[in-house]
Image 1 (cartoon, rainbow, N blue to C red):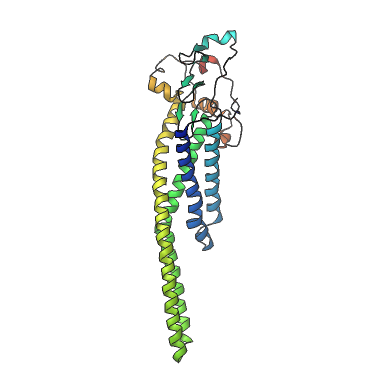
Image 2: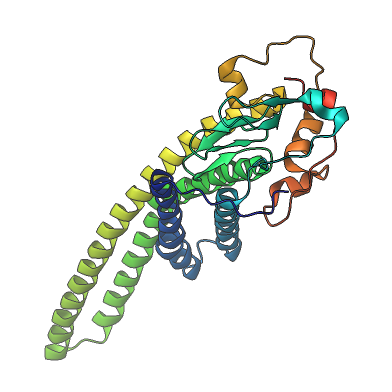
Length: 302
């Protein structure tokens, strides 16, 4: 359960997922090359900042890829239903197959999914019982990575660049002082001319790099703001759904308004979604989810 590869043939989903991978790849290459590595060499940041950025980036892409290919909880064609559990199953009116309650039929994938939350085109897959935890990790690490990227962009504009400008002007002033003391006669004039030409070339080079860095970082900041704003709202709705033990489809269909249904503690609902009671494992995508056994009067109350 949850270990089968689930591949959805959907060109629209491929385009959406390709866009997400492009944004991730762009920031993973540009931010270290333009901000982290140069300022690490200049002593402005520590190696820990670089490791933290790559750590967040790795966990983000790992949760994305696993959520996109993981089986969300596809039901088999001929499920074996125990006699004691038949009251918790129902017939799907679209594919005419028996399914557990709280399962829903995905028209895009063409089959029923256990405890389906919604079909997400950004991962080109359904979000169901077996990959919901990976989708939550994707939202979480995308927020962390986008926030980190925006912080680095802000620091580069208002903190790192002034330091770089001061260092450059200080080096230029020291070259002038050292050159003037050793210059005499014609050699002094020639060195002045050569120094002026060198300063012009260095200034042109700095302006060229600065203009390109500015454009690249503006694009990075724009994508970071869009990703952070969109994912934050989605992550909030997902958390509220887990706290109330309802899926997005159930909220839209208003089928969970039964006041007398039993309520579960939030620790139990999160443990059921992530497949473990160990909270530290909720943040690790490099593992296999093991479903927890829960009483049917809790799991199938809809």
